[in-house]
Amino acid sequence: MPKFAANLSFLFADRPFPERFAAAAAAGFKGVEYLFPYDYPAHDVADWLRESDLEQVLFNLAPGDWAAGERGLACLPHRQGEFAESVEQALDYAMVLDCQRVHCMAGLRPEGPNETELETTYIANLRHAADRLATIGATVMIEPINSRIDMPGYWLDDMGQAFRLQRAIGRDNVKVQYDIYHAQIIAGDLARTLEANIDRIGHLQIADNPGRHEPGTGEIHYPFLFDLLDRLGYDGWIGCEYKPLTTTEAGLGWMPR
Image (cartoon, rainbow, N blue to C red; front, side, top):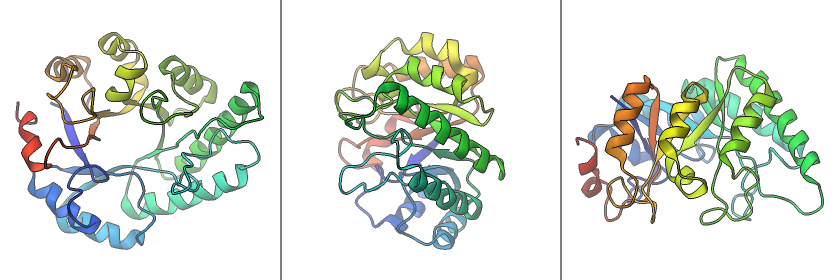
C-alpha cells in the first residue's frame, strides 16, 4: 500500500506553516514534505515534526532567489560556489530533521551557455551534492518539471533526459523524483515508464491533470497506478503535491479509496 506524505507547501495552506504539521497528522498523514525549510531554524522544524509524530520525507535545496524567479542553480555555469553553499545548508537541515531525501532543482535555461556546458555543469554539481549527502546516508533527487505549463524555461523538462543524466552522474544515491502530474504533461505513457524505471525512482509525487488538483479531479487514473505500484513492489513515499480544489480536508476523500 502506498505511503502518502502531505506536501505542506500545497496542503493546509489556510494555516500558518508551523500549524500545518499538526493538521497533517490529524488528517492521517505519517510523513511530510515541502519546498524549503530555510525560513525557520532547523531545530524548530524538528520540534514540529516530533510533536506531531511525523517523518520528514523530502525538501529542496535552496533554489537561488525564488522571489526573483530563480528555480534552482544546478545547471548554471559560474554559480557553482552558490550551489555548493546550498548543499551545505541542506546537509545541515537534513541532519537535524533526519531527512533522507533532498531534491536538487536544475534551474531555468540561461542565455549564453550552450547545451554541453549546461549539462557538464549539472553533472558536476550533482556529483558534488551526492558525495556530500552520502556522508549522512541521504539520497539526492532529480525531477523533470514541465516547462510548458508550470515552469516555463525549466532546463530539466524531459523524462528520458532525467534517466540519462542519472546514469551519467554515476552515483548510487542519485534517484529520479517522478512527479506523475509533470510526467503526464511532459510525455504521458505513465504505466510503461514506471514499469521500465521503478528501480531508478526514489520518490513519487501526485496531482491530477489538468488543474493540479487532488486525484480524481482529472484525467489520470490513480487507482490503476496505485495498484501498479503495489505490483511493482514500490515501498517508498508518495508526496501529495497538489492544490486542493476547495479545502485540504474536503479533498481527502480519494485517499481511503
